[in-house]
Length: 166
Image (cartoon, rainbow, N blue to C red; front, side, top):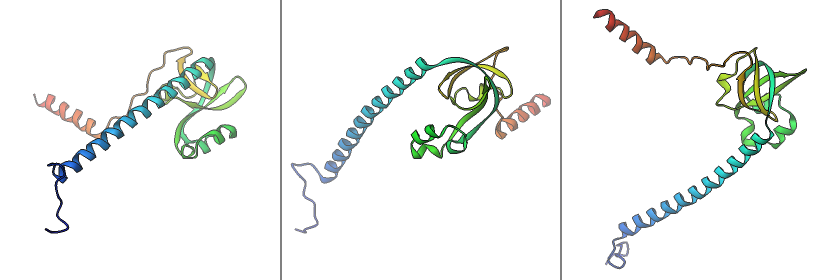
C-alpha cells in the first residue's frame, strides 16, 4: 500500500469529508455575518433616531453643491479629526449654503442631493452639519432629468425610424 493513498474514514470518502467541512465553515460564516449585520443595523437605526431628534427646520440659500473629498470640503477640523482615516479620502455630497449671515459647508444625504436646487432658497431639515430633508420654499422641488445613455438614445432613434417607415 502506498503512503500517499487516502483511506476512507468510517466508510465516507475523503472528498465527501472535505465537502462537509467546507459546507460547515460556510454556514458558520453566514451565521456570523447575519449577527454582525443585525448589530450594524441597530446601530444605524439608533444614530438615525438621534439625528431626527436633533433636527431643526432651517431656511437656507444654496450657493453651490458638489461631490468632494472630506479633507477638501471646508468642513470644521474637529469633524475631520473624528472621521475614520479610510473615510477622509472618500467623496461625499457637500452643499455650500448661506444660513442667516453665515456661509457654511454642509454634508447632504445622497438621496436628496439631486433635489437641491443651486442658487435658490429652500427649507431644510438640518441636524448639526447634516442635511436630512429639503423642501422648496416657494415652489416644489423636482429631481433633475438624468442624462440618457447612448444606448437609450439609439433605441429611441430606431423607434422613430420604424414609425416613419410605417
